[in-house]
Amino acid sequence: MEAAAGRLPGSKRPEPVVPIPVQQRQHREAALNQYSYQYRPQRTTGIPNVILALLISNGLAFAAQQMTPYMFLLALWPMGATDSPVPFLPWQLLTYGFLHGDLMHLAFNMFALWMFGRDLEVLMGSKRFLTYYVVCVVGAGLIQLLVAFTQGGPAYPTVGASGGVFGILLAYGLTFPNRMVMLIFPPIPMRAKYFVIMIGLFELYLGFSGRAPGIANFAHLGGMLFGYLLLNYWRRARRR
Image (cartoon, rainbow, N blue to C red; front, side, top):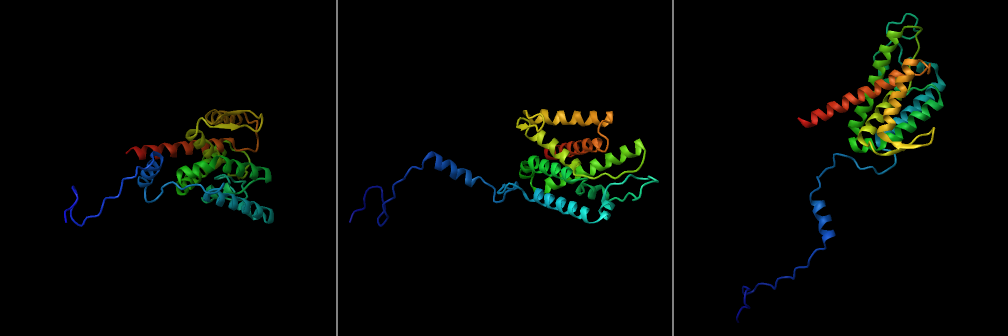
């Protein structure tokens, strides 16, 4: 029995080649080129893990403030002040960021944390985002200690997550400079980079003019400063 031309005896007839549509082929190639792990987490809910933990912990700390006055032992008190009822302790540089003066203070900070921090946590990853936030909070506290020492006057505590929030605001403006954000008052849209510049200049004006007593404007700027320094450090380390 003769074999058909071009085939070995006993071999099967080759299956016809079916062309793969271009779109399907592109999806398959993209799947093959993906890493076996994902360095950057994918957001599956409206609140990523670190931001959710921060919202809950700040809310619980505020509830505890309403139950006992001893929570203000965790506020940031000035160094070396003779009239301070509470001495400065190193951990206050972190714990003060979980306390707030009133409900509006808490609500504003937590809303800004959620609004501007969601995409940053997804982009940075939870670990790096938490590191960035903590550095901004601690950096803001250091600047506030320096300002309180320079200005003198009666001792007063500093509370609030604003230093971390302002650091996140800076990172948002640098990462998504052309995104449109809507101001609360006046309600006009503007690009994120201009919004960050405007907020920074406004805080600088309030800090030097003293027109916002009881608000740690320089601490806000300190959060932005330390956030900028950390982002630059990470950028340089990535280039090496």
